[in-house]
Image (cartoon, rainbow, N blue to C red; front, side):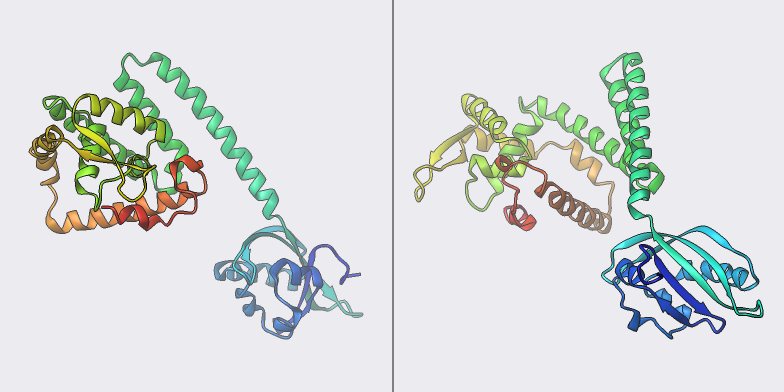
Length: 323
């Protein structure tokens, strides 16, 4: 009957050795009975996290004193590393004289239930935050107030409770403030931020980029980049020319006016003054951290972006190779 049970069943004797490990426990932890039988309970640190085994021991002692314990949740993992949430109940086993000679534990995998509960809680929190955001946005009097409201609420949603909220909020604030400063200076050159970015990538790429290359580098949809290039061509900043090896491919190059605009936008000084607040060591540390975050973000996007972006299946280093 124990061997046919749909939940894991284990028996631990008074010496703390595992005497039973049923098939359901084998399947739950992907650990055969032969690997655990006759081993001390401390060897359960293999499937169970160490701190949970230590927390489990007082429960065993209580059961050995004749108490029945139920509903204790512990975190565990299979032999292949997959994490599990396990609900543990235990009761004493007695011999014919009424003496306790072992502890029987019943192990139920509640991972799916816990995930469903977490998802439901997150959904409720998101709905509440979105509702509050809509009320605050309606009360905000200007675009700056709206942006700050949305940023604050987004911070709550993406993990303030996980320690990321302060970082994310500061990161966004620093980014947008620097962007505002750069936009103000670029306007004196009759350039926008995205146009300055196109000039930079066209000028610094190893070979003239294609519109598809710029789509990936700028994280913009191809039709958006095409419209942008059309406007820049009308301004005389760039031109498209046929690839000498592939006739159906065009590449983007700077015109003389574009070259001059690139040289002038390099002289924009406010951003440089802001960045000069960092020492050389701080700059290298920040750069390494941002490159790490960028690479991870690209990996996250690879499976989610549609084909026109060109990320599906692409090595995350391939774009960085154009830097």
